[in-house]
Image (tube, rainbow, N blue to C red; front, side, top):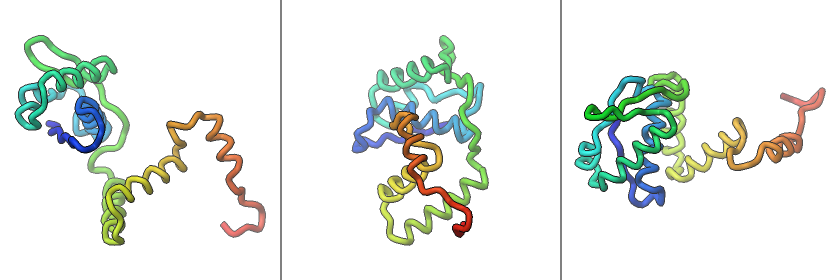
Length: 149
């Protein structure tokens, strides 16, 4: 069962935080098809938010085809996302890296900025049109024969 955490200082709309946390749980395999999401009442009791906010988030997830509301039964997961299980060895490696970053004195925002920069390098910047990404890649220095690798 997913437990939502609402960060009121994040600047992200509360319903979007619920949508994002649900997507993350789907990517990590913490939620699987057939699983039931907490009821709006349960989320309200745990987070002290307006029930309409929860329902708005669930409607957004339903619109995306990720969940379905079953009248009188609740909201259930229809499909999963991604292939990064929570117990992946990569998660362990990332946790070790994050611990080293913290020991090095980096703040959470520093780590997030650094991680985003690496993601952009490896996967492209989703905010940047693909044509600009191609130009950026073309501008990267290319290894030539005889260069140390």
